[in-house]
Structure formats: C-alpha cells, structure tokens
Figure 1 (spheres, one colour):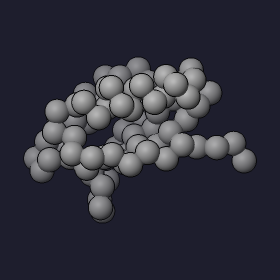
Figure 2 (cartoon, helix red, strand yellow):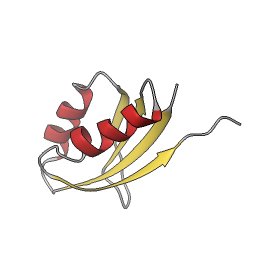
Figure 3 (cartoon, one colour):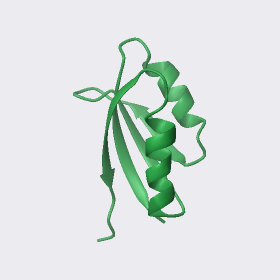
Length: 77
C-alpha cells in the first residue's frame, strides 16, 4: 500500500484548525504538530500511487491556511 509523509507549512495561529481537518481524512493515519521549519507532519496511506497523489493535491493542499507542502514517498527497503 503506497505510503507518504507530508510536511506542511501553515499560517501562524491556524495549526490546530488544519490538524483537525487533516485528522478527519480517512487516508491520514497520523498527524502531528512539530517544531522546526515545518509546522505539521502527516502520514498518509492510499490504495494506489494515483490515489495518493489525488489526496495530496486535491484534499490536503486545498485545506485553508496550508501555505506549502513537502511530500516524501516511502519506498520498501
């Protein structure tokens, strides 16, 4: 099952609202606020790479107050 980790930059003061919306998505398995360059770390699983791409592009990146994302696709090792 395809797996990705997504780092998000969020508008200041909106971290909790974004986290709440992320956790409402069934494909989001884990979501955390983090310290550092990024504000939020999300673990996503999907049925296919195409579905994974759609979730990130059309659902996560469209959440209000999300400024930018960095996606890391996991590979089996």
